[in-house]
Amino acid sequence: MSNPLPETHLVRHGATEWSLSGKHTGRSDIPLTSDGEEAARRLAGRLQGHRFSAVWSSPSQRALRTCALAGFASESAINPDLAEWDYGSYEGITTREILAQRPGWQLFRDGCPQGETAEDVGIRADRVIGQIRAAGAPILIFSSAHFLRVLAARWIGLPPEQGASFVLDTTSISILGYEHNLEEPVIRGWNHR
Image 1 (cartoon, rainbow, N blue to C red):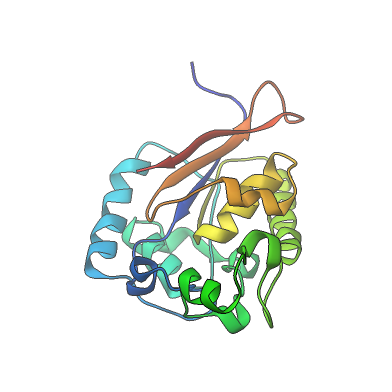
Image 2 (image 1 turned 90 degrees about the vertical axis):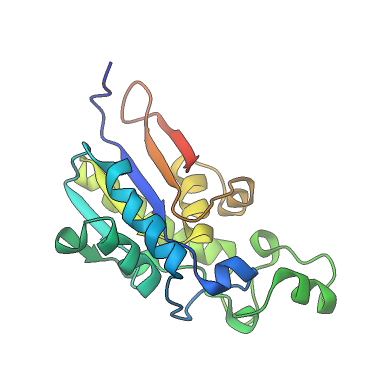
């Protein structure tokens, strides 16, 4: 039985050198690897048969390229609120390196110096959710892991810090939707590879 309520498909971008090495990639514009590009091309088949009223992408080249390789370049619009977490001073370094200088640090709890907190990212996620709900139709979104994790938490009414509980692999597809009516937001699918 098909669901008559609108669904929003979330796609994490393909692999980059920094995503493979674990470096925090917020505003740095790192390209996809060749494997990341191939995985992005395979998204076309995985999304086949779905109709979307709008396709939105983060402004990053990794999200835009994933969108294009999946076959949605001509339909896509950049939404600046879909940008990845601004890691500030932690841009381009790994969690392990951060922990060596700041033991016990957790991104979703502590945020980043000269960057964003979970609350900051949650404000952007709430704006995107408002746009999704105003559209009232199927949407396809291409973005990055930490932003999409906060978006999922906020979708179901959790604080943005709870995005820590959702893990996303590169080129994964997740689905936000509703159960019985528009007052019951749920996560219909998560991290499908």
